[in-house]
Every structure is written in structure tokens, then in C-alpha cells.
View (cartoon, rainbow, N blue to C red):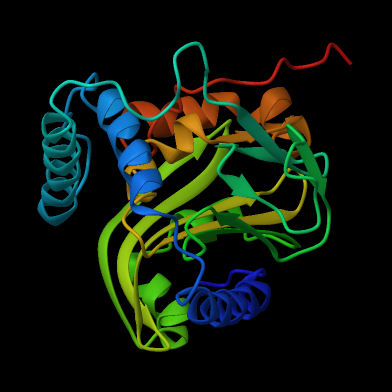
Length: 280
């Protein structure tokens, strides 16, 4: 897999493992915070249906385990409403990477260089590491110049991903490797169990290939605490928005080709929120 952002992602991962090792001693939240977070997550997860997309049996089993764990936590709360106080809502934060898009997370995620109270945070240097309140979970964003041709990117496989990234981990066990589109940008979604520096993580990696902007976008979520793993199932639909510069040419000339790939099952249709396309 000839991904131009590889070196940035590798350096980002080294930063992450060093950060996590230092954070284990004092960065975790209190037990009450964990109970509040997991119970609120359980309430939301209980509303969802377990669907059967094009996932491996292992990935589906992991998804069912996440739902079971969430429901067990909810049952253990004896029906009491814990988590967000009455009248409060979860504040969403928009972590904007230049003019290319944003990662949408809740207020428990921060960027060290930004004011924690800011709802919209902008950054344009990479890798950028967003940190969860546990001190052990991270989301790393890389936008790199260069891309593959559509044909070369579509031809990538689980084996080529492992060849490109596998050596950066002590071990990697891929549970899901899926082609999809995010706001009309060809992408791959990879879920895996990884170990680095002796630390075990659940990993979600989104790789997107924009021929329109000649950019490669990498968004990697590493979960150690177990509190952010529930984001994995719909992360590409609920937590990522790509802006027009990443797919402008697709709008003008390439939509028929995308529709053909979706109808053939080669690509998954993106059903999440989209930005309004300007008239010019």
C-alpha cells in the first residue's frame, strides 16, 4: 500500500505510545466518571439495532460484545439516570483540519494547544493528537500531500495494509478491513487489536484517498481504556465530515463511476451528514 502519509502516521504512533505510557500512572479518570460515561453510552447504544454489514464474523462478534457490555452496565445502574445532569446535553466539539474536514467528538476530547472550552478547534500541522479524558485513548489526524490513483487505492488489501503498517506494531490482528466512501472520498476502514511498546490497544484506522485535492487523510483512534471503543461502529458516519476540496472533482465528473461501484457492492454508500456544496 503506497500511502504517502505513512511516515507521519508512524511518527504519530510513536508519540502516542510514549504519551500513553506516561499517562497510565495518573491520567485515568475516577471510577465515578467512568460509571457516568459508560452508563450514558449504554443508554445511547441500547437504542441502536445490531445490523449485519459486510463485516467479518470476528468483527461482528466484537460488536455484539460491545453492545452486551453496554447493556450490562445500564442494567447495573438499576435504571437510575447517571452521567449527564438533568437539563444538560453533551457538548460536541469540531476539530477542524484546515479546509479539508473535521472530526466531531464530545467535550471529553481535547487538544493540548487549544482552550478546553472551545467548541470549534482548528489545526493545520500534522500529526495532531486529540486526547480523551482517560489520558490513555487518542485520536490522531494526519493530512499529507500526495495520493494514489483511484485504481491503485481500490486494489489495496488487508495483506498490503499489513505490509505497510504491520512492522510499526509489536503485533497486529486485523478484525475488519472494509472499502467505503466518506463524503464521496474513497476510503478504507480498518479495525484491529494491536500491541505497541507492550501496551494493548483496540485500533480504528480510517484512510482516505482524495484525487481531487491530491491528499491522503489518516484518522487513527486508539482505545486502551475500553471507554472509546463504542465509537468504532459508526465513526465514519457520525464523527467525520469531509469538505468540498477533498471531492470537488467527483461532484463535477465522477459521480456516475461512484454510483456504479456502490451498486456493484465494491463501495459502501455514505449515509452520514454532508456539507452543502457551494454553487460556484
